[in-house]
Length: 120
Length: 343
Image (cartoon, each protein chain N blue to C red):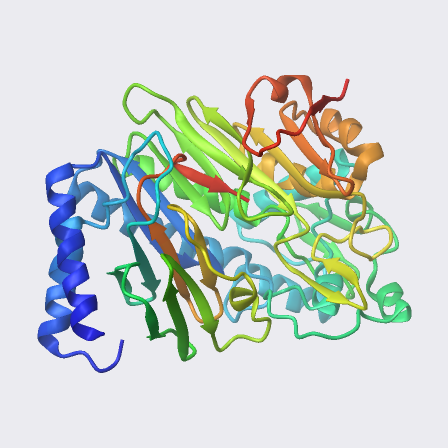
């Protein structure tokens, strides 16, 4: 998240504090993604799924490039050897999850979920 | 882009204010994977303390069971064994874990084996970052493959652990279960009366989120979406071993990380095994052992281990369950698959 000012980070931190990281709701029905949560070792930030474009997230190993498009998000590149995160492709439904574990960057589609948790 | 991210953060925060959701979710990285904590109405202070307690618990887990990290207890045992230093005195907690592992290995007929570290390293599945390339040679596999079951080649008594210097302990087949058990205990002790701890896809739930049970989906081994779902009542763990977590492909053949101790090769015949049990450590080890047992042996191995809620998916796509599991599952694919009940 390089390139942000102290005020930007303060606002994001306040937003995270207000949500308490808890805005993924208890829901009976599946819903479309309303946003995306981006997790790193430094914490969690949120981003809209309606604003298409590529952006960079800095993880433990370096830069992961993510792309939002048509209400989905995917890893475009990441500093890992297997590229499993890139091969996973776009995720779109609420509760979907993709991660580059070596770089400690994960993305999660927010919104109304059908299930409390996914076993895999 | 920067302003969009900041604005979005605020919008999300504000939208959350009005809804007052009863579930609190946190994600963190630990033990080489992602950890999800879901707590029902924990209260902000309590949740903060609970997550701190969980982090400490997971760090202790890594410190105890990592097979080759500097300072880890199991790594120190491996180093001493490799240097011919048997018997190796063990810290009491690690001794208890290894005793449990050897017992599960014996009960599973050697299909769960806590001494496959050399084989795991040879295949490059330790970190999930194996670079593309051919599988190890048959000669190298034969060299790393144990000749006898773990219970026959590793002994544990009052003097400590004794094993051949070529033995490399690796609790990867049950470490997540142990970590989940300890992590749930830490969360409950911190005051989380109902929640889910999901460690890299394997989870345990306890309590109830209000007036309904917890709802869990089990991933389809050949798709991104759920295959089945089930509701959890009280404290139950759901663990799945699948060939889709760590794998590589070479010349059209998929090689995955669940290794058969008798062949040294990835176990064949099943694509996933899901076990539901109150004990997460047993569920973890059983899922591994049943996967290795394959289509012909999984039911017998389940009985031997005392697990009665099992679902397996075969390489041909058949979904087979035990009678006790069948009534718990709801099919989540369309068109629906038919559940076959094994007796």
